[in-house]
Length: 116
Length: 116
Image (tube, rainbow over all chains, first blue to last red):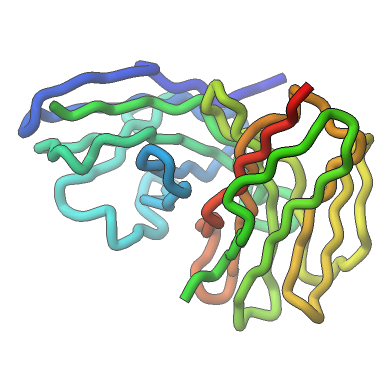
């Protein structure tokens, strides 16, 4: 069964450093998402992406965040200058479409980001 | 205001007991979608079910069943004859097409522990 994959599974970085989190969405999916989950808290939407541009973003997704689809398979989240409060699990998700029966988002296993 | 409320933070049951996880949502949209996801101790988010606002039929899938009631804005999830492998955090989520597109708004989650 197709699945969303994410690398790395765990990333440790120093405050102020840039990190890139990578995701490979399900191959026939057109919509891509990033969410984050601070330890012990709920999952929060960051951004959605379609047709090589951002569709929506939350208030969390400020100028230090960016997303990119550098090639036909990868979808990345870049955090330019990490802060301690960026420590969280970051989930990538993808959906086939946005209409009825195609909008179910399937999630990857997550990347745990630890900022020291 | 919370858009998705899962009032039960933690539930502990003994194997073979039935358990119901509550989810109450708030929306002004007439078209919306509700989801349940499971997050086992390994951390990934596993899709369980999607329900649209026009379909109030209850659904059963094996030991799992869902009760959607628009009149009370609730979408509750019941596990029959619970098993230890059901131990996980369960999240209810809402997608409001008219106001916020395809983003998912998650509840706080309910930690279910099934003891042998």
